[in-house]
Length: 626
Ligand code: AHR
Image (cartoon, rainbow, N blue to C red; front, side, top):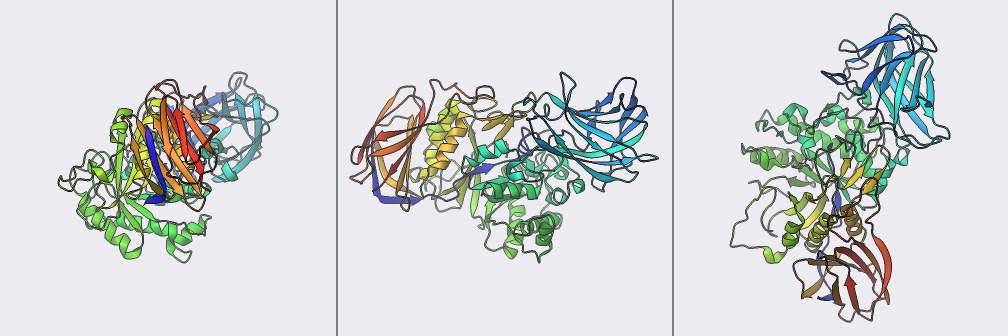
């Protein structure tokens, strides 16, 4: 293969926000994932089998009952509680509750865990209440705290649990117990480990570090299907996700489990702040997954107002109603917001109401925020669309075939564009810009294998080449809890259990593409390539860097003769290489580093580079211009 590159001929701009993250509550991404809360079912939801993940503890001859009590709770949002009636207990034979956590409690040595619960005692004060983190196999308490006394009114009680020189482990549970008879109501039990940047109500550090390494420029949230909910009443109702946790009622996620909404709107924004990403805010647009929609017009007005208020919560000064609310929640500084997305995958609305709903949202948002860029999630008649969100879930072979999807050469003014299940069949540079808001090569479970990473990398070369049109792109889904029952959707970028996490080969492809990217593409030409070789070349004039990305989707090594048209280049270049012997090779929770990028230096002969790529490889070559 020969590749001629012309560093003196910048071609098209590369969007400064090209690579970002897409996220929603799926696969236990937030609760049981990045949201570091360790207590599962903190608000005592139940089903026919009882209160989920909570069990009665009766030591020795202690005797007690537990039940859901719909008649009392600490707030209007949490009107119910768990009622523990202890008939008999003493200091040695305590009665209480056990929580089994998110597939256990991940404990580390010499670490502090901050906890709290809301509680109320029956006829007279109760206490002390003992809170312990206990090893499942030995029954040994690894950390213990006491709440001396609980009064007969609802109050919040805080405690700190500190481990000593223990072995790190996850097969642990939480026990809350009392050594005398009486009645105790509990609600919103919480325990947090140390979090990323030590944020209260914050995030798991290992997962945040993995995302930071991708250099994401934006976060698209809260969905995905999560913004819509299965039914209209289950949509992401942001006003119920802010303020103290005790004022958040929680809601059903479309992926089959309850969300306490501890991970609410402000937490998403703090996540953006921590990773220096811009929020790409998806607002609920009145359509939910099971097919219901809110009629455009007066019925839709309250939802439109919610969206306008939400934007004010993000961007308004503290003298605005919702800006002041944000300040009250602890964040007086407004957030920078450029893009607002109206709904999610609205092509699923077979009633055809999106045209009118989109227009109603766009009109109201424009009236107050004329500078915002609006993203439509299906083709609409309205001309007031800045960006269209297109989705692709495909196999590697499809990405090999379609890596030129957005190339100008595929634009075809004589054939009308066809919407093909989530995206148009070809590009149109006269239309709105494109946000590839969800895409993935779906091969491998729970996380993608090397074959998928190759498909992804081929696809990303096309995104970079066409980033004058494709201004943002985000892989989906991002996260999966690999414990049994943790996954609802196969092929997710980053896997984790209760204490560890790992990146898939496709994750490392993202790290490589996001870490080495210029601000413009360069004129270039390839000769001799078959259908399994892909490349993109970008440059950064200020840094004097060229970033060449190469993908060899074939099992055979590939020699590439690269000519930089007499450009003056440093005599050695940095090579980052990700490769495997087979497309099915992958990383797992127990073998997290089988396939990782390897860095080396390679010689440059003047303005030429003769380079051989291994089979099944993704490579970045960083060259310095002199
Ligand atoms: O990424 C998983 C789901 O795929 C998203 O929630 C939805 O938008 C898409 O259909």
